[in-house]
Figure 1: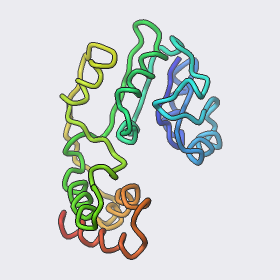
Figure 2: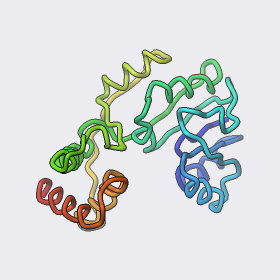
Figure 3: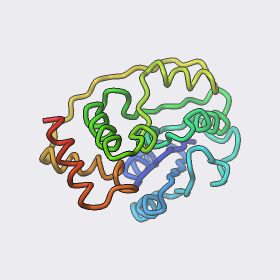
Figure 4: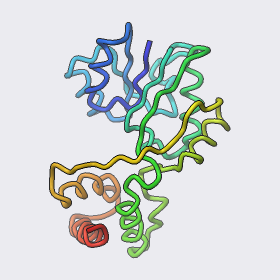
Length: 197
């Protein structure tokens, strides 16, 4: 039995249903949960990673917790997320997770933080993302649960299929949407684009 933590629109959840006896997807976004259901995912629930029991996730229920590109969004209390994962795993269960880490988009993130700071905001505090180093996340895991078999950062080169501007817009939206109006968002994107070219 597998839990897909932060399942998004269910692309991987749907594929995992072919490989596992039972798959449960959870996501914090109602729109993503609905998209996963429309895709054909059998059991998808609305839940925050730091409050899995609210979605009916029981202790010792899963053999595997899988998370792909989701843990970076669980910034408020990464330790609580780890404790929730631990609680829902059966003894001997495993966590398999991949998410962007420190340096993954560091130039873009640094430029967004600088742009926010220049406008009187605390750029680190308002960032929606958690990008730890491997050592930092190892410490979160070990402080809140377990011995870590492997925690490392593997550099990946991404070939963009869109322009740099379109890529930046897709990333920056999650950062600026809550505090910058449309004109300010454009200014910030211009600044970030100049900083990372």
